[in-house]
Image (cartoon, rainbow, N blue to C red; front, side):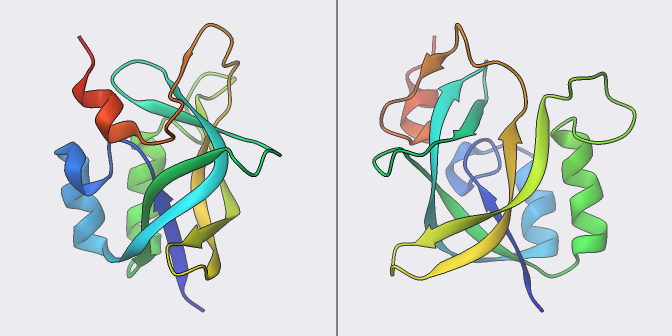
Length: 136
């Protein structure tokens, strides 16, 4: 059974982050997708918080994991998720339903923000890349 990963921040194609090279070495881009959540600006990176509001959509990309046993531990380290990081860890990795632009849905790993979003700026568009370009 295929495993998928939904990315919405610095791992996206247009973010030009070096960690994206690790992603594409071990995964295959499937499609643009969205996840029902609110998106916040933490620093130079975003945070997704699941939402019950259907209008709350985070824009991102879906990847099929070709080598999940190699890639997921690397990404867990990058996202400070898992053993060895102080509690509460910044993110938690969970299987969530994401929707492709075609309307199809798939379960994919998503890094969900695991701390309070109080005081963080909401990215109302749900799209991190334009917001990142306007950061000062």
